[in-house]
Structures are given as structure tokens and as C-alpha cells.
Image 1 (tube, rainbow, N blue to C red):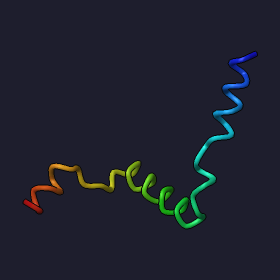
Image 2: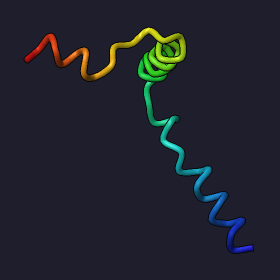
Image 3: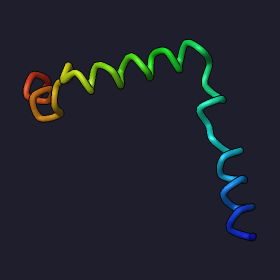
Length: 50
């Protein structure tokens, strides 16, 4: 039963609810862009800034 209490405590400490609605929207949009392959890898990005 101790494991059940730990699991319930972990569910209560989720930080998603601490983000503002705007922050949640931006995170969801970024996730969608990444899933669609719309991103630049670190090395390519840094080539333009060195």
C-alpha cells in the first residue's frame, strides 16, 4: 500500500497545472512542430552563429 501512496503523491505533484494557459498553448505548439519535423538541429543552428 505504500507504493500506492507514492503513486498518488506523484500524480498530485504534476507541474503542468502550474503553467499559465498561454504557456501550455506554446508548449503544445512546440511539441506539434517537433512531431512534424519542423525544427533545426543544434549543430545546424550553431553553424550560423559561430
